[in-house]
Image 1 (cartoon, rainbow, N blue to C red):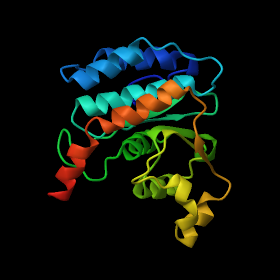
Image 2: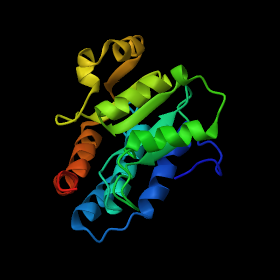
Image 3: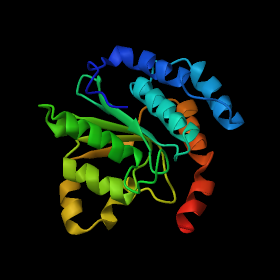
Length: 208
């Protein structure tokens, strides 16, 4: 999903980019096929400002599941809403890499581009609330806003920021961590896509 060979994607082009990615998602798995159909037929709700970005993260999450990874998709947007970087969880495929959560993949891509953009002006959209590992990375990077579609009751950290060590709490000051302003349909989609294979993947982690 590297973007260094691509031009930056304007906000109004994000839905088309999402659909082009979705078109290539294989649908042998019936659950993947079901959500591919739902996302492909979804009409953006103009009443919610984060709809294009929310749709993009859901598509990326579904792509991750189709590849055998955890269903989490992320994108980083500039102040004008254009896509700067995007990616999805790659912990299990093409080979095991314990650090490659969706946020990590996207942050790696963004930082490798070495763009002259102030991190505090960026928004990281994610289909699922970041875990403690990703939360620490995001705080270290200085991303200004983190908007998620679904809460993660097992591993989520953004709503538990008061439990962070003092240095991390200090870095979180002035940053925004909140639910994305999107439709309930996309919020449900992100949660259900994540649930497709997470129990199986968690068992694989426990048995390593």
